[in-house]
Image (tube, rainbow, N blue to C red; front, side, top):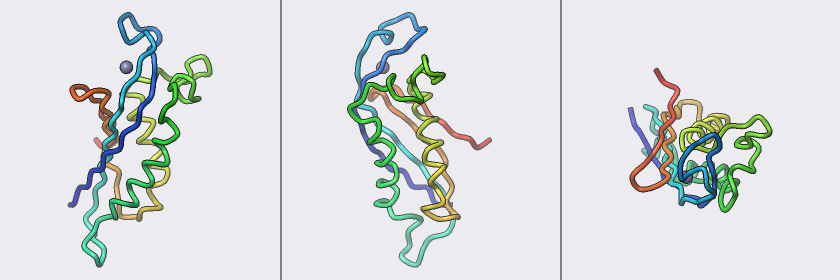
Length: 130
Ligand SMILES: [Zn+2]
């Protein structure tokens, strides 16, 4: 099995609701998103998938969050039935968005995990494998 990981970054503000602590205040992070895919079929060039294609797909999703106030995005709008924009929920959101587009990259490819770093010392990872 081959595993590929790409990293992308975006800057965005958020605040956590129903939370007692500093993160209840408006603040920002430069978020790092790591996406890992896996598969056992290489193409004739020896690639599982072209890094460039994977980056382009993830950039399309991440760019919607770049320089935004995440709480105002529909998925993270608690007032509109959304979820708190924690690193955990951001990782799950990005995972599900990518999964919806995975077929574009090839049927043999499997999305393993999305890890979101909100600082160099703290990350949350979302997977759906058992
Ligand atoms: Zn934060």
